[in-house]
Image (cartoon, rainbow, N blue to C red; front, side, top):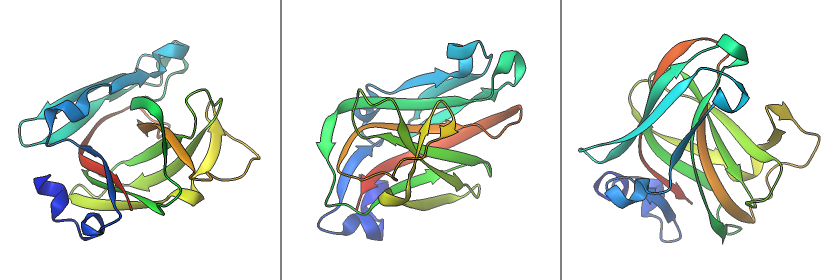
Length: 175
């Protein structure tokens, strides 16, 4: 909690901390999902830095129709209609990433928000109801995320180029 408690948005009484990686147990259930599911050769990894944050790192390869790496966790759906935004405390590497959520565990599509990183620790705020629907990388002609339930959280890198990456995540909350 040390890193997150200092965040003004998370100090709000109604904020809900989803993951605080200062707690080693917060990484339980997270897994890497790379483009290998389609034959790609990208390789991601999740570790926990002793300083209290998750580290998602690796290399994206475009070979064999590859091009992405992601880290995700699934859970029983939770009610999120009272929240307006996701607040993520992170340090990127100057590259662009995607924050992805699923409303229901059996949903065939997910909702995406793209964000840049600066290379410094920062607080990324993503308005939930502006996240757009996607299936297998294709934007769908469906309404944006209704932000009623949440059953998956994912971070993805898929910038259309071969590159190394590192995203450090201190915590994720809803506000």
